[in-house]
Image 1 (spheres, rainbow, N blue to C red):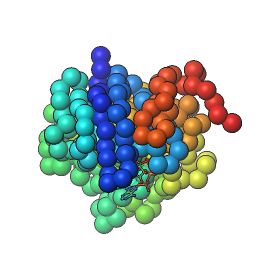
Image 2 (image 1 turned 90 degrees about the horizontal axis):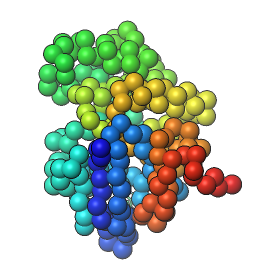
Image 3 (image 1 turned 60 degrees about the vertical axis):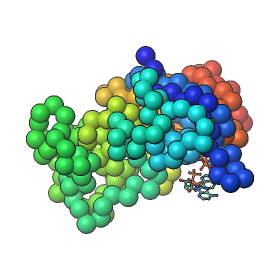
Image 4 (image 1 turned 180 degrees about the vertical axis):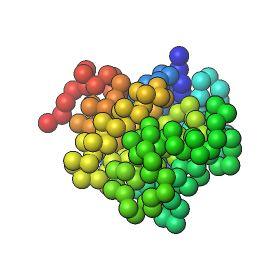
Length: 226
Ligand code: ADP
Ligand code: ADP
């Protein structure tokens, strides 16, 4: 089954066609990655899926429903950006709870229990009372992922979540993100300019160029550029 699709989606900014007539289908439970050089339209595509931008043309669907005019809050998504932007004056637990946005946690559990479960999922068990600045970049990014997952979204959107980290932390976070995605079976759309990362982490990869995918395929069949 298809979790989300873009049908003839374009985004024009003045002279720039950031996204050019994109047709994509992401399957339920799939780890789907948009990869390509800076400026090829990855972030704009993700923002169109999230609803932070409205397409100039075309339709965005979640599970067959047209969500093109639906605001980000009313889409069933969790979003993590490259600059994690945790609230520095809140503890780790408060940051994650903030993701619930005062709604009841899924599954009829308490919000404290939800936060504890999520911190366990992202390998930060018992770290509720820490301050964000006591954590490494990779740990902070995992808190941001836990916060995004708090309301139990159907779709997780990640924009270069590892770009601020050094190579070693990036490698670890890559494994952790993959583990989290597998554990939940959550449909994930991931943006990176790092081809090696894309090939390592994804079920399928869309190689973007000039605002559109030029190839969409599983990693093992993607041509590796030197
Ligand atoms: P990527 O994420 O692959 O680096 P982007 O989606 O950020 O690419 O950008 C694609 C193109 O659209 C670039 O040429 C960029 O400068 C342009 N662009 C993106 N956002 C805006 C905007 N808000 N206003 C004007 N141009 C934009
Ligand atoms: P990335 O390459 O990771 O997409 P950018 O620095 O290109 O990051 O873009 C970061 C943000 O700035 C994006 O959300 C995009 O919409 C916006 N942006 C990018 N290019 C422009 C531009 N030329 N004018 C205005 N906003 C832009």
